[in-house]
Length: 396
Ligand code: PMP
Ligand code: GLU
View 1 (cartoon, rainbow, N blue to C red):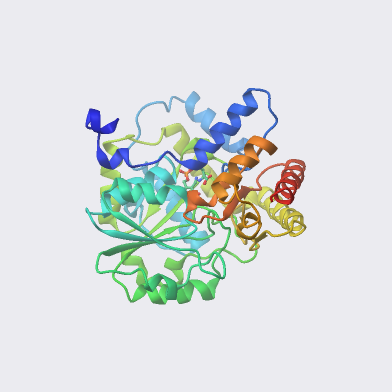
View 2: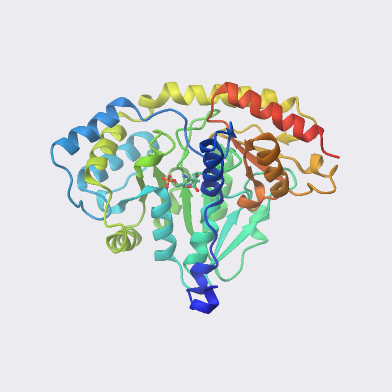
């Protein structure tokens, strides 16, 4: 098709976001009246805090309905600067901050700004669905370090095997989507001292920073300050503040790269709606405490989900220390089946036969795993994992 119309080869090679596609499929079944246990998409199930909504409504009523500045207005960037200093011990100036329509747009524009044709970007599997396609859209090459034998984790020894003279950047996502691992201080220091010896750009995606349950989140850029001159900290409002639909993400980094990202937004989505900026700045000023109750409830559900999972034979998951996903290793269970022998086929079977929607590991460069978001009700979680148990038992 694309050959007939001579479409862009680069863009035609991209796939739609699998997590969003699966969510759409689950919602379509729901609209047809079918009860679906939807663990597919990664978004908190609680509403945005009432006060944040109120701030946006007030701004709308006050007439904040026009274009805003590309890359975010000064009040929002100042709120981010204060938040980074207060919560992350990271020092940036407002002109080292750029805001965009979600961390996804920021990352997309960042890869476009950073990469040239043929540059390589190291990603460690399992990795979030969009990095691969963002890198490809920029004409560069994603190089994926496979999941280590011992399970999902990032370690310098395995990364080193994938380094070439074309390696330009490294992406770290901790707390991690999809596996939920969160590097502790020692692991970050070890990784940081490895990265320090390289001349790469480090993209540190910390969008799940509020959701670190077992130890306080720390940024690798704070722990290893030598990285700062070639690092970009990424975060946003979607996960920690339950504001997925508001589309607010940001990056902090050296001014030269931040300027390029801002220029690109001025040529694409223009700006974040200004009434949303007001609400986001207010939320950032409140900080982590505003969401503590919800964060605690996610940690409880993590524990419930792990207990339920422990009862299912032939599957295992590392205990997620952060984010809100269970990343379940089903490789042993799938060995029992002649037909449902991949996580992709098994996830389709789960949806069609058991009405359970989850994301197959193939979407995260980690075949043999399934991702379940546990940001759902405990009753859905209990029933959904019981259905997973039934489906696993019936494999033969
Ligand atoms: N990074 C990671 C690791 C994510 O899981 C997501 C998913 N939302 C994003 C970035 C993008 O977030 P946003 O909704 O702010 O675009
Ligand atoms: N990041 C979320 C997820 O992994 C939202 C979906 C998406 O942005 O693709 O499910």
